[in-house]
Image (cartoon, rainbow, N blue to C red; front, side):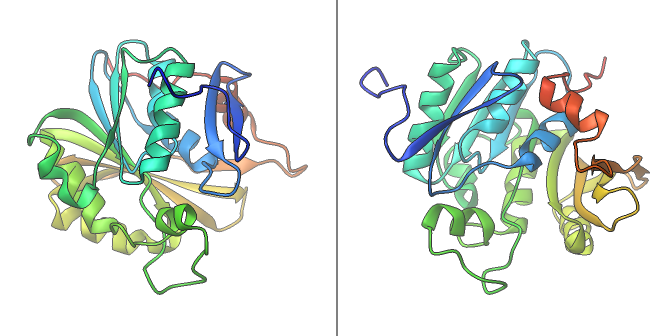
Length: 255
């Protein structure tokens, strides 16, 4: 890593979150993180000193957010694409989070080759939203892999998350609201009992566009539906709740 430039290259950008407290190196034309990552990082309820895995970490934005806002946790991001791994590693160094954020190149579909079972306290993932042959396939390989189930589908990510957890620990993820049935069915099949859901709406009264979901490994049935999360006010500005997330109010920490 010492030989890698920390400044963005000609085909990269340096983007910031939390009023400049966090910097992320991204490709100009490849996959770029969206608000989904910020919402998911704040949805995950943490306990002090936990070790968390982010599956399909991309630019490493979720591990960076979690480590920045929760100084007692350690986070490992797993990403299959070599170039994105390189950028994520540089972002870790750029933000001086080497001691608490690790980026590992690896395939979620072969998680057993990377980690031992039950080696994490929580897992989180933002899996590809679209089936392989659904919708237009992006010509950019980074975006294509991030959006379509090419290097791993929903079941692969949930199965990997379940493998990494001990009984009673949790997985949090974000997924399209239109695929809620697929998500909940797959979670149950992989022993991740859905326990907490929150639907995300662009505007108050509009149909849900995303679902934030938490499952607990081996738990009994009974689910809590949280109040809806609305992204925009009528004037198209962010709602106070989303604004607070972007300013850097930390995720809720369970005691």
